[in-house]
Image (cartoon, rainbow, N blue to C red):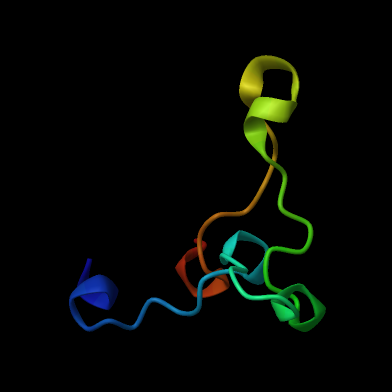
Length: 55
């Protein structure tokens, strides 16, 4: 929790970042995102936390 309080949590993974503007996907935004509701059981193995937050 100290990292969160200090805002030392790392960057949001690129595949879950929104890409509202044209061309942002070319920079890696939202590339590789798996929409859970498109999969059986509505579950996918996917990293949501920043690398720095993984234990």
